[in-house]
Structure formats: C-alpha cells, structure tokens
Length: 233
Picture (cartoon, rainbow, N blue to C red):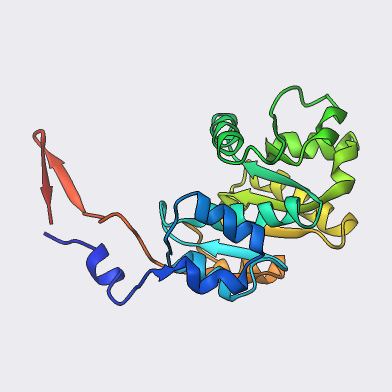
C-alpha cells in the first residue's frame, strides 16, 4: 500500500496562532481566536510571514489545506480596516451559493451579497455590500455595465484560478483581471489553486508573491476499484 501523505507532511509543523499576533491586525487576530483556531498550518503561516495584508498573492496547495482561510484573513482586513469592497470569484453558481451561505454565517460583521443572475443587469444595489460573491462571467457583465461598486474595490479573490488556462472560461477571467488591474491601480489580487501547472509564470503575470506548499491534513491513498473492492497500493 502506498500512502502519499506521510512523507509529504514529514517535518511539516503547525504553528500556534499566538506566534502571529504581532504580524496581524489586532481585530483580525481576535476574529481568528473567536473562531476557535489554535494553530496555523503551513500555507497559512507562510502567507502571513510574507506580509499577507499587503499586495498580491498566489496560493498553491492541496484541497483542504486551508487556502480559503488565507483569503478570508485578507478580505476581512480589506473590509474592516481599509474600508474597501471585495469580490470573491468562483467558477460555478452552485459554489457561489455555497460560499455566500458560509461567509454570511461565519462573518456577520460584514455585509455579504451574491450576484449570479441576469448578465444584463447593472445591480447597483451591490454598492451597499462589502463582500460580493460572483462568477467570472457575471463579473465581466458587471464591469461592462459599469456597476458603481467596482470603483470601491480593494481586493479580488479568485478561487480555482488555474481555470484561466481553460480555453472556454479562461479568456473571460483574464479579461476581468486585466481590466481591474488597469483601471484600479491599487487593487490587490489573491489567487487560489490546488492544481496549477505553471505557478511561477502566473505569479509573475499577477505580480504576486507565490506560496507553494504540499501540506495535506487528510491522508491521501491510492487505490484501484476491482470487482467492487478497493485495492490500495
């Protein structure tokens, strides 16, 4: 039986969040404490060590490794301390609804909305919200309709950013990123991906710090299903 994770995580250590109290805004650290976290895992503390709260980041680590929390820390700071709005882009409407429900429950102190409907709608009501969950196609539409909230954006989070290489959906996402970087000179970007083949190239294009780690909290096994039985190797 071959088990990948034991060797991958050998030597990887979690770090107590208290060690990072002076590297985080006080109110953001307090939120993390209240959420019940006692440790940061490698992708998380590496990002904080690289000055997470300023500039662009590309986070590449396996599914379930805590990438999303990195983005959450960043958007909480952007909203609560820098008084800027945030767009969180996901590839699917179903995922947008999932994130919307999760963030709305998790962070009642910020105003969260979702925009995944009519692509011909300007939706200026979004100006009343801090965090907007949407898809790349809908964000492209909002840009084209010159929705007012766009001019108050401080951060764009792109989940599954490796889809920028997808020949069907990638061009729209690339246009969205290019527009926002061109017309909002101070905007920050965070890209999240578990599977990306050219992280250095993408990080260079985004002018971002690159955080790569293979930390995987759940053991990964390889096996083959034969006659209704899984045989691990």
